Length: 113
Image (spheres, rainbow, N blue to C red):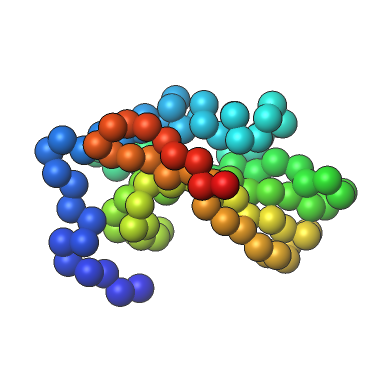
């Protein structure tokens, strides 16, 4: 992993969503499907990683939704605060995309579709 010094610095006015806000966004995106939390990580500022899984249309398939907060962390780095989705056929990743991005100045989520 290559880190770019200063790329992810947070200014004093930037907002970050809390866990409950992230879970609310994921509930909307998954439209009431049963969710399983796969990974969750926090730091002093709060939640920075949350990955959930829901069942896909076929047996054994799944869709993973992942919240990543802007920054560099032990598990990953992210250029923006966003929620993405990834499709799996069994254990095989078959694609994915960003669904929504968080604006740290306004506290609003922007749909990417």
